[in-house]
Length: 149
Image 1 (cartoon, one colour):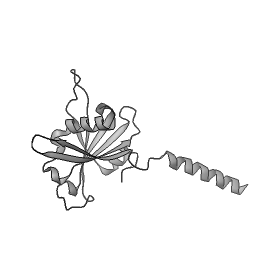
Image 2 (cartoon, rainbow, N blue to C red):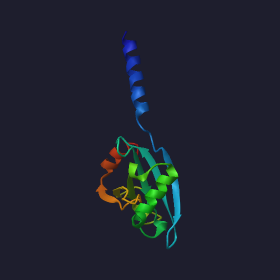
Image 3 (cartoon, one colour):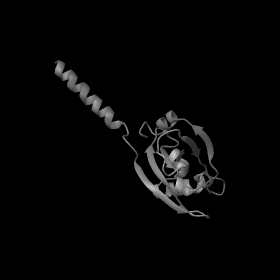
Image 4 (cartoon, one colour):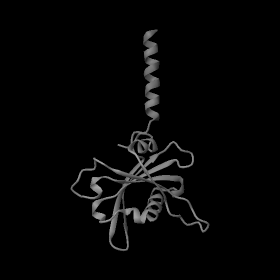
C-alpha cells in the first residue's frame, strides 16, 4: 500500500513538472537595417500566464548595434511579432540590457537593466508608442513563468 502511495505521488510530481515551461518557445536572432546601420538582437518567446498578453518576448540588445535599440522599439516589436506569428499588442516585451549589450567582450551575466514595454494600436490601426516600465529580475521570472534563465 505504501508503495502505491509513493508511486501516485511520483506520477503527480511528474505531471506537475511537465506543465512547467522549461525554456523559451522560440530563440532566434532578429536582424534589420536601420537608417544608420544593420542592427540585430536576440529574441526569445515565452508563454505567459496572462489572458490579455499570453506571450512574453525578451529582446537582448548587443554591443555591435552601437546604440540601444529602444529608439526603434515599436519597429523591433512589430518585426519580432511578425516573425514569430502574433499581434504585438498581445504580448509583453522586455528589452534586456546586460553588460554584453554595451561591451562585446563582457559576459551576459551581471547587473542587467530590464525595460518592460507594452503596445496598443491607435485609431489608424498602427502600432503606437510603447508604455515603459523598469522591472526587476523577479518580475521577469514571473512574466516568463520562471522559464527565463
